[in-house]
Each structure stands twice: as C-alpha cells, then as structure tokens.
Length: 102
Length: 398
Image (cartoon, rainbow over all chains, first blue to last red; front, side, top):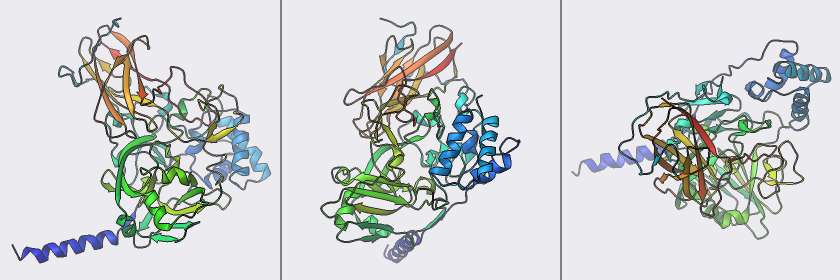
C-alpha cells in the first residue's frame, strides 16, 4: 500500500496545477445570414454589421416604414451608430420594402 | 363534472404508452415563430435554435423541459453586446470588488473558492422569453419559449464577498460588469445593479463558478456569473469581472431605460399603449409548459398518454399544476415531481386518456405558494416582458 501514497500525492498536485492554470477558449461559428437583394442592401449591411449580425433584422416582426425609421433612429441616437444622412433614408426604405409587413 | 376525455391522475401510471408521433428537435412545423430558425451547434453546446449570431443568442428546444434540470450544453445563451469573451485564462482572471468599500479586493478563482460553498437550484429566464408571441408584436429578440433553463448553481455567497470587502455604511446600489464589451464607445456597456439590501438579506444570491457540478460553459458565463434566484436573468451577469459598491442609484442604460416594466400591479398596459411610468423588472411571473408529447404529435385513441413538463415562479415555489383538455372548462391536478427548492423548475406529470378522435388542445397552468397563477388572456407591455399566459399544445388523436 505504502508505495501508492507518493503517486497519489503527485496526482493531487498535478490536478491542482491543471485547475489553477486553466484556460478556456472557444471559437464562434461564422455568421451565415444574408439580406434580401435590393437598393440599399449594401448600405444596410455595412451600417448594421458594425455592431451585430443581420439576423437581428431578419427575425424582427415585419413592420412598416414607421417601425424601421424608429429602429434606425434608435440605433443612431441610443447606440451611436455612425450613419450618413443619405444612407439613413436609403436604409430605412430598404428595410421597409424588404422586411415590411408580411 | 367529467370531461369528455378522462384524466387518470395517478403519477407515472404504468399503462402509459410511448408516443409513436413526431418528435422533431424543435416543433418548427407547428410553431410558425420558429420556422426558418436553424439548429446550430456552438462551442460547448448541443444543437440549439439560432436567434442571432452576433452577439450570440441561442434558444433551448422545448423538448428539454420535460425534466427539472436543464443540461449545461442545452442551456440558452443571451448576450447584449459584442465582443464577448472567447478565451479566459484563470491565471489572469480576477474579480474586482471596489467602490465604497473598506478593503478593495482582487479575487482569483482560488480566492473565490475559499469562501464557504453555497448551492441553489434556480431558473434563469430571459425577461423577454416568449416575446415573439406578443400581439400586437413588439420589437426586440423574437424568442420562442426556450430562453429559460434550470440548473444547480454553486459558488460564493455575494453577501460573504461584500462583507470581506467591507461595504461601508451609505452603500446603496451594487453594480456588476462582465468581460463582454461594446464594439463602440457609444454603445452602453452591459452593467446591472442590485440594491445592497437585496444582497445582504438574501443568502441565495451567489457568484457561481459551477453549473450542475461542472465549470460554467463560456457562453453561460465562465468563469463566474451572478445568480439572482427568482429574478429575471437580466441580473445574472455573465463572465463576471467587476463588482462596484455605490452610494447612489445606478441608472445607466441597461437599468434605465432598459429592462423596465409598466408601474402597474400587473406590469402590463392596454395592448399597443405606452405606460405612464416604469420600474425595473425584477421577480418572475408564474409559468408552466407541456414538453412531452411535443406540440402537434399524434396519439392513439383510448391509449393513456403521459404528459410531462415543468412549472416555476419567482421564488414562492410551485404549489399546484393543473391540466385541462376542454379549453379550461375543467381542470385536473397533475402530480408534482421532486422538490428542488422554491427557485427551481418543478417537474410535473399527468396521465391523460384520449377517448375521441381528432384534434385536442391541452392546457396547463400552475399556482405558486402565494396563490399567483396564469391567465387565459395574455398580458401586454411594450417591451415584451413577463409573459405568463396559460400555455397549450395540440395533439392529434387518431
């Protein structure tokens, strides 16, 4: 029996060291969602993707122009999304046209 | 009064048959809300329903809610901002406790584990779970019903940690920040606050480093997360790194205007209207679900079927679960499973014998320890929070 004791002690030391030095790393899968083609798609993708994936758009309930204007305004005023004035109009129209009531 | 289809109320009746019907991993075929949402496999996770990829938001298929404990790899994921941590070295990680304290602390994981171990079995549920079912629809994450899970959380009591740091008199709010950081300085960092008294009066609020006996998955908050039993998961800050004691109220974005409900007894307003004033969302409402058989399944007439599911509330414990097969005209008591404490999912089962043929709706409702229950009409608020309408599934009896 006695000769197992040092082995057990070594095992305990090794286990403790493994826990103390533990690094956990993950790799997130790529984003795969695409937007519907149409005028303004590029601008919408560029602006929205700065902060989030495009499924944030595609999973929302379809809403009219007022809904998407509200969303774009919120993204700019609340989160500070830097979108130029011409792009704002284009993106709002694109979203209302392609992700409107369904 | 006897219903047309009679319930056999004995728990675990041996006559129950296994269902031969469909058992899709998620019932997208009968749930239009989930149609088109792919099942995806993220690191340390099994197949979950994708809501969004960046920041990741993953939903647990309803089939997991036939049991009290949700497996770590099936537990839902919800982040607010990006980037989120994807690598944490425990040699480097520290939990800072600072602000209005006598002795600021910088705790390693070993330090945190020196505090007395405390465990609580508790439901984490997103405030907006089931938001996609609101009518009129509301903006925000369009969750089905799977932004919830129940686990045994083990860690250090937050009150022990605060005592060690010596929170001074005059302390009012305590804030919690994690390793997730905004992409732009203009995006508000995700920081949440609890009243210091809320913490000091509740030994079940813990800084958890274990989930169901394992380290936390990265996407559920490795290496440590806050656990606030009974309250919505918005407070359960993940990948925790900083705890700050303040002498004033913390009212930044994710506390105000974020995560607030109408200041009315029901937390609701007339559908489509705006509340006059709001308060922070806190305690969870009573909910219950039928997880098996899956919605839309086929069952055989005259053969007993075992119904299974879970019920929970915001900390008073589930006292009773009831089933109806006649649109709520009469209700029959289900049998409750093991009691894992007042913050946990409570498993329930009932044996039901369909006698006719055709489509049948089954409904479930729960009552908690103070008599709160669920309504037949959904309550509405503009953020899509607190949903707790009576849930139902449809079975095809053939």
